[in-house]
Amino acid sequence: MATITKRELVIKISNETGLTQQQVFDVIQRTLDSITDSLSNGDTVVMRNFGAFQVKETKAKIGRNPKDPDKDVPIPARAVVKFKPGKEMKEQVARTLPLIRERDK
Image: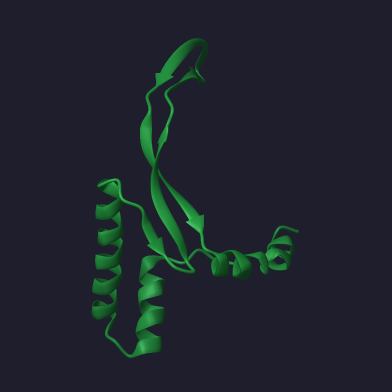
């Protein structure tokens, strides 16, 4: 199993649809920009059967400096993006367990 880059995704979709790579890149980039803009406004982005992105707040906490464990380091609260996969994605990914186990041997 490999890592898929945006470039590889553009090439794959371009080959499957017949659209130019630039057209596919523009659509993907605009989609990602729209998702990012919505999340930065605090909105939840839901794509049926794929999943949902939403902004959550992490609590402030005290961490440790690995170089000097005696010192406390305050870690402020922050906004993070969480992803909850949709039903179809969960089911499809669940079927990859044998592949993952084979890869990790």
